[in-house]
Image: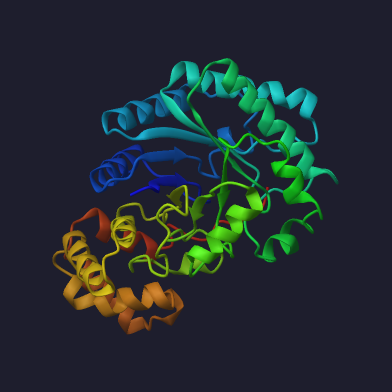
Length: 356
C-alpha cells in the first residue's frame, strides 16, 4: 500500500479512558495502521484553553501515549486548535510554538496537526492569516531539523456548503491564500465532498488534490458519531464506497466513534478496502469481528444492530430495546457495556459540536 492509515481522535463528547485508548492503539497496530493523532475537541488543553501549559495529569497522559505508540510502532501525533490565533497572531504565535516545542522536547511526537476546523472566521483575510501561521510553524520545525509531519486542517475542509452556513461564507480567495508558497511537505486534511461523506471516490480526491496542489490527507468522518443526528447511531457496518484510493490519497485518518471498542469493526474493514477485497469477504469479516465482540448475543441481536447503524435508536420499538438489553446482558464484554451505556444515554449528543 502507498497510502498510510491512521486514527485522528478528533471527536466531540466523552473522552476515552486511558485503557480504552491503549487497547485501540494495540488493535490498529496489529491491523497495519501507522499512526495515532490525539486531538479530541473536548480536551480543553488542546482547544478552549490551549494557551495554558499542560497540567501534570495531561503531561502524564501525553507521555504515556507517546511511549505506547513507540512500543507499538505507531507514530504519535497531537492536534491543536489554536482559537483566536489569527485575531492575535503577534501574541499567540509564540504561545503555539512554545506548546509544540514542549511536545517535541518531552514526548516522542512525530506528527503535529494545526486544526482550524469548526472555528468561525475572525478576520476578512483568514486564509492569508492561517497561511502565515502554518509557514511559521513549518519554519520552526525546519530550524529544529525536525522530521515531524505537519498537517493543517483548514476552516473549509470540504466543499460542503454546511460549513458556510455554520461558520460564515468562505472568503472568495480562501483556497488560493492558504496554499500560496506553502511548502509541499505540509499536509492538508480533507473530509471528501461532505463533512460526512457517504462515498469518497478517486475523482473526488483528484479534484481536492488539484485544489491544494498536493495529495490530501483524508480525515474520514466515519464511523464517528458525535453530532446531533449521528449520535443516535452505533456504526457497526464496514467502510464502503471508498475504493481505488491507494496512492491517490496521501494518508487516510479515521475519526472514530465514542464507543471505543466497537470501532474495531469499521477499522478492520478499511484495510480490507485498500487491499481490494470484495464486499462479501468484507461482510464475512465484519460478522466474525462482531461475534468476537459479542459472543453470546450477536446472533440474536444482529437485526437490531443493523437498525441502530442504518436508522438510529429512534427507530427501535420498546420491545426491540427490551430484547436488546436482555440479550446483551449475557455478554460481559467491553463492547456489550458500550451498547448498554449508549442505551442509557452515556454518549448523549454534545451541544458543543460544530462550535468554537
